Length: 254
Image 1 (cartoon, rainbow, N blue to C red):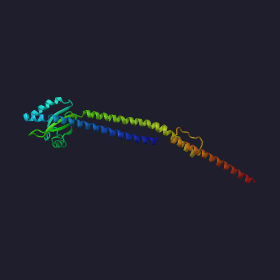
Image 2 (image 1 turned 135 degrees about the vertical axis):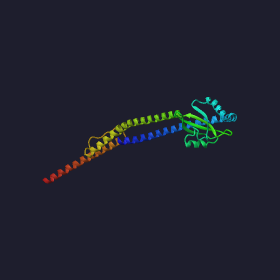
Image 3 (image 1 turned 120 degrees about the horizontal axis):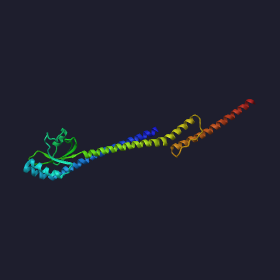
Image 4 (image 1 turned 120 degrees about the vertical axis):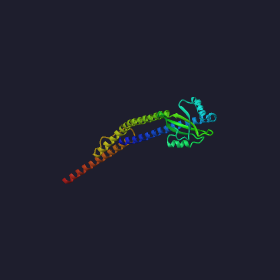
């Protein structure tokens, strides 16, 4: 029983680790796919608007750039926000932490960078930056912001699913421990132990019969065969002892 429980505990831990690893892998994959999707949107918008933004900047400066973005934004998905940012401005809201500022300051034309930030409501967003080169202007570009809430909801769903799976495995393991540990292993093993204890006390009677043809049944058969041999030897020894005692008695009276 204890041995079976230990074996099943090891198996349960292994399955829990595998389930947890699969959950972590799925979560990372979801974040990577979301980031790749955002970067693809940023590249597409950057390629589509590059010349248009450059022309608007030449005509009306940053006001022209802002007008172009206002015209384009309604055409985009409702869950995606877009605006113009300067990458070399240390006081810009998108700079954030020193690490984020370093990454933004290292952006070059053609390179896309993604950062995770929080909006004014505390919701996490994935902000993707696509540089656009404008004549005689500081390096800036498009900031594409997408909420991470769908990914986080999927993450919570995966975690709940993993916990339910592990809980189900634990409940199933308890049932397996009872069926295998008590009925298939525990009871036959207890019967074998009781049989060996009777043999130790010199009781070779009452053969042990176990169902099936497994190892326990074979061991029970071997014990029964041993008891038969011991009984035969005991009977033979008793007969020989009786004969010797009778012979000695006759010799005394001779």
